[in-house]
Structure formats: C-alpha cells, structure tokens
Image (cartoon, rainbow, N blue to C red; front, side, top):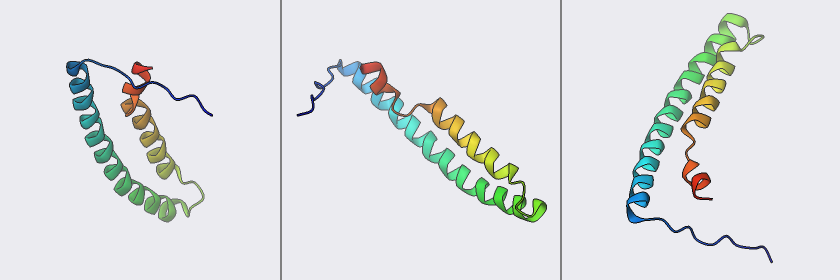
Length: 83
C-alpha cells in the first residue's frame, strides 16, 4: 500500500496569500493560453504560406514562448514550497 503524505498545515494568513497568488497565476495562465492559441494560428498560417510549410519557425517560436511562460509562472509552485 502506497504511503500517503500528511496534509500540509499552514497559517491562515499564509493560506490566504497563497490562494490570492494562485488566483492571479490562474488568470495570467489563462490569458497567455488564449493569446498563444490565436497567435499560434497566425504563426502557422504565415509559416505555411511564406515558407510552404518547410520551415515553421514562427509556430515553434510561439510554442517555445508558451513553454517558457509556463515555467516562469510556476502555477503549482506553492506545493513545492510546502514539501
């Protein structure tokens, strides 16, 4: 049987602060995802038209930018701090 981690205990102020930070990060993450969605469509269209699909540089630039933002925002970082 796998060993379960005990529940994390934190002060009320720390919990409220972490909640507020998490909410802001969720909003930012959603906004960037929506932005990346539309920009990636434009990027692939330009890549296909201008480069005939052989060198999709813009599309993969958008993917890299999105990945860097996900790492920077560290949405679930509060869990890492608690462990």
